[in-house]
Amino acid sequence: MQPSEPEQLFEPNADRATYVRGMFGDIAARYDLLNTIMTGGRHHAWRRLTARALVRPGDRVVDVGCGTGDLAIACLRAGAARVLGVDFARPMLTHAYRKAGRHARRVFSFAAGDATRLPLADASVDVWCSAFMVRNIPDLDAALAEAHRVLRPGGRLGILEIPKMEAGPLRPFARAYFQRMVPLVGRVVSGHESAYRYLPVSVDHFLEPAELASKLTAAGFEVRDVRRLMFSTVALHVAVKAGAAH
Ligand SMILES: C[S@@+](CC[C@H](N)C(=O)[O-])C[C@H]1O[C@@H](n2cnc3c(N)ncnc32)[C@H](O)[C@@H]1O
Image (cartoon, rainbow, N blue to C red; front, side, top):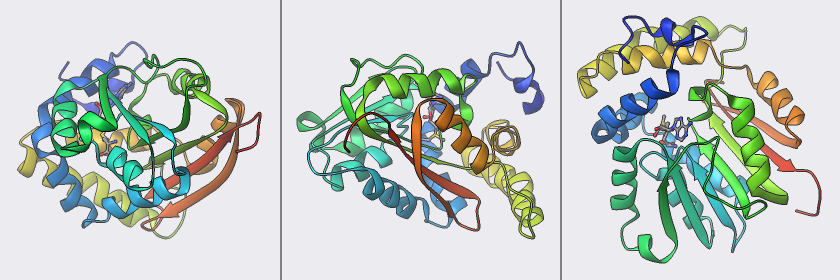
């Protein structure tokens, strides 16, 4: 689906998942470059921070919406024993597999799949993490229920995401950046007309950090930390599946 306006993707009967899968398939080859341009190179530091907040030596990790694999690789560097990257856009997985390089056969695996139906047994991972993915999921409650299912009791969940901007003096500047600069740079570098117009709209339709924290609590997690990064344009939520020592 190529909507003439990204707003249409948030109408009740729109098939946003199909659009998102196709869109990331289309931009896979330029995705890493665009991340670096749009964040001034900061995105690697955020993924490192996420991995360090979540991963302990020997952990089994699933990176959901792994894209080109940077968070999965950061988790491995933070000491994970095994990392499964799951994404429903196969071209993104092709890049992830290539970047994982020699680690791929030993400790990485990648699977095409949906965040709401993970190819994992109940209570089979120590860490569920995702970066810049949950905003794209039409049924976030279903994805959080799935995260809860695959995590062992006491397992850790981390969500790195662009939240809906909270009220404050920086909001007009952040909105101007997302609504003007991001679509312009995205169009020039990726050549994809709607992908980077979708991004600011998806942010506007997402949750503020406190709202996401409430959703996590409702899904059975204890929220341990909410960190705001890059002038609050990015947030990291760290939570634990209640039930045992962690
Ligand atoms: C913005 S990219 C982020 C990729 C990577 N996590 C990163 O940090 O660069 C979002 C990724 O989530 C994937 N995605 C979105 N919704 C998904 C879903 N429901 N199930 C699996 N993957 C999904 C997209 O295909 C895309 O690769």
